[in-house]
Length: 260
Image (cartoon, rainbow, N blue to C red; front, side, top):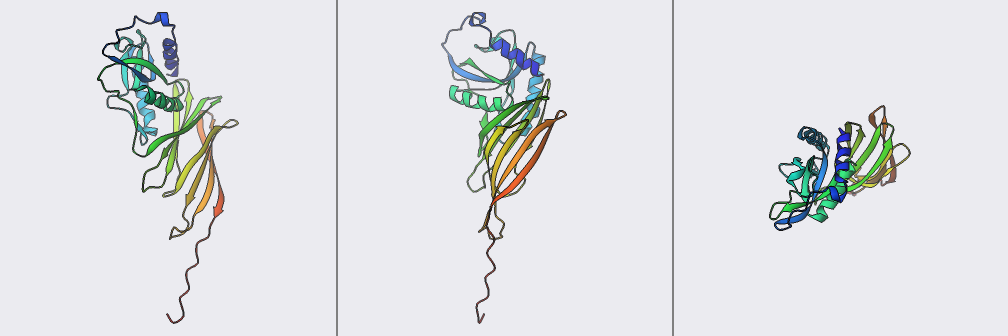
């Protein structure tokens, strides 16, 4: 299936002389299309629609597409696309937002791409959007014998709720993808991703979290936790290391005053 994405990239990289004559600019505006994949036929492109819908379950809490997307476009439908191919669009955005979200989707799947197009004046941009409280964090990827490990983190911060995060890790293999979601297993903890990087044969996510050990909540424990993610025999394997950084003991119960 991923070979179709390579096809799309080749189609998009054809020299300028291979492009059709430009249409008059009247009635059109520059936009950025987010492209997940595609193929020579609509049937091939529809496979990428199905693959996106399956994988998007991992980040559905953080990011959603506009109604009607993912959507298949034939190259002749939108000025800027290559005729003779079909493209799976995740949305069409203003230039700045398109560039920002393009990096998000490339973190989830390195073969996703963006394309400058001409969009009808007055038509909605249909850009993906983060759900309330969520934002993109960071990403890392690593080549492994089984394919590519790609990880992206999303941060959650909303007034009145402890900040937290989730991570999406995918093992991208030829024609297939396996993915998992990482997140703090504790409830009501303050947690942040400090770093996500590629190590030797693994991806490493470093997390800082604080949790109240006392019923009063007046004292806290601060920890660092490291998540190690690797691939073995075509499957994603994770392990954790948790190290206390600071421990503040709870206050002793106050003694009754004399005469009480």
